[in-house]
Length: 397
Ligand SMILES: Cc1ncc(COP(=O)(O)O)c(C=O)c1O
Image 1 (cartoon, rainbow, N blue to C red):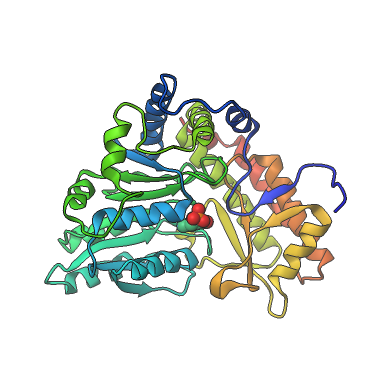
Image 2: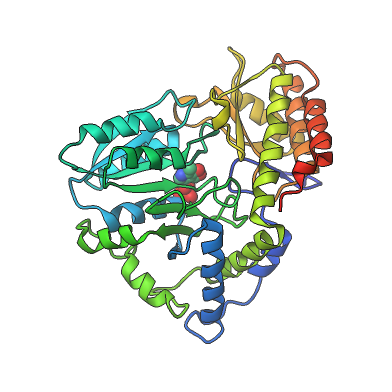
């Protein structure tokens, strides 16, 4: 491999580009995680995290990838054989479902065509059928990273309430937190699962559970075995800013800095920025004459766009062409979408010119790989970026 000049474009939908401020924050000597400096920093982090989850309730940090936080959500609240209702919106929802099965839970699945989000009406009718109240949890992936579809979390909450059902509500926000508006308290979510490597602009390695009072109560009688993932000891230690086992010290320095950056920009501005870049990307895709996988406009994801390849053209061949020619990584098709789609990540530490470069790389790559398309996608995106930069609505308080 010879040296490639210029910066690699990491436009997969996570892990995302880690900003220099965060890299510099991580690049410090590791200190004693039981020493006097550490507790106060953790307490600031926990407070900053609550603002990002839009909750007043505890947020727990695990030194783990997002998959760990999925497991923590299930094992802390449920017992062997419990029924859980899961909405199979894509590859990640299927993986969470497989995990639940392996843990000895009885999964009830609401399938979709992977082009739309969780259906609140279907959730309501399944819960209404459950007269014995044996379903103990409803699990939804807020932003399905394999498809670019965002489920309506508040509408599913309403559906659970309309059925008058006491099930816990668990939501995976791994590719939406700190990018797409998400309200743990207001939307009545019991366990929110998140990860560090997307909207939080950190490397992979931290994951989170935001937990409601109801979830903590459920954890007192939940019988699934747990030790590393146990919330109890975490919550007890976190009160003074410490952890029951060694935390990921340097990633926490990074998280401290990332939370400051989000606070400086302001969450509403962060959400508006992602919405604007997502709209510009969709305009580019349409101008190319290609199809967006998400079939419900109200459920378009603001963190990634999944593009369907024209019949007879392999998405991974296009991705390889773009990587080789322009040093840009795009997301591959996952599960049953392998080879059929590619995913453009537009989340995290990202701006107009980074999007311009990303879309230029895709448009040039389509031409180079001989994929049938129309020119002008980049221009369509530019038009949206300039028009919306002028619009007063851009100035979100
Ligand atoms: C929505 C969603 N859920 C879960 C996961 C799994 O997280 P991890 O790979 O960090 O374990 C991912 C990973 O990309 C994801 O996007």
